[in-house]
Length: 151
Ligand SMILES: Cc1ncc(C[n+]2csc(CCOP(=O)(O)OP(=O)(O)O)c2C)c(N)n1
Ligand SMILES: [Mg+2]
Image (cartoon, rainbow, N blue to C red):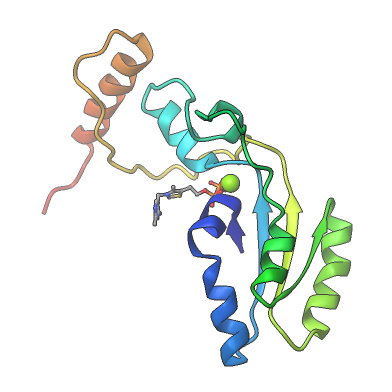
């Protein structure tokens, strides 16, 4: 299972899996951007920027709408695109029956995430900012550090 952003960073592994005959099934969750980094950016007090494709800097040719299934086929895998959980289940049956690596592209909602799991990850927050949200995130960060066990 892989996100659309991660797939763009490692899709060549599909060609290797086909070449070696080591079949893998890739379920690609396409939410049009780096959603977890988008969430982290905002948890640190930042405004959403340059993570979801809709917020990204782009030039005159716009934002590419990557056809991930087509991309996987070009690397030698079989592939299809689905739009619901029911279609995903049916596609998994075909993927399991296939003799070669198989990618299922599932379009999912954008930046919405499941609620946090409750664990704390230390990420540096600026001490000085004109943004109130950043100053609040810094105050939360300092409080959280008080509860950190060292050593
Ligand atoms: C090689 C590499 N570059 C950058 C990162 C930082 N990083 C962690 S998650 C992530 C975004 C992943 O986006 P996607 O795969 O689309 O998953 P989503 O959060 O949207 O579900 C990035 C850039 C990383 N882990 N590895
Ligand atoms: Mg994504």
